[in-house]
Image (cartoon, rainbow, N blue to C red; front, side):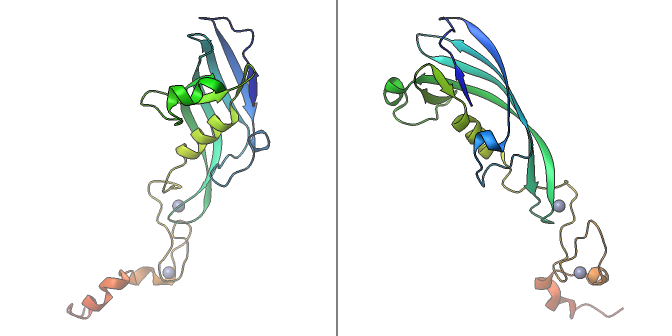
Length: 174
Ligand SMILES: [Zn+2]
Ligand SMILES: [Zn+2]
């Protein structure tokens, strides 16, 4: 996932389109890539040796629903904005941290921008904390574990939250 920038002059920019999968990126449990991702980038040299990288990452991902635990596909589209600075200047410019208010900083060496770690981080950060296969997902029956999106279980007529069950005795009988 490296691109050579040795031929980009100061204040010049170039377009790139890259395709990659988990094989190029290296597998990681935090990255739920499921197929070929596309990265469209504009790379511009600003002040000497600093490369502004902007574009869009489109990636087919696969998540596990936090309610019904089914896996489901999701196409994610992530805006990219980063600045690559020479390795030697990196600590001085960023104080060692890759995060800034406006853009993320990444080090590079030998006129090659290694996009792998950056893409990795964008994908990991874009993964939802509580993925949902659909907003209306009905989840699993707390009693028998049936997937309520696919079936109604026999507990369905008596769906009372377990912690409220004792209160039920206080209700008048029908
Ligand atoms: Zn679900
Ligand atoms: Zn049930």
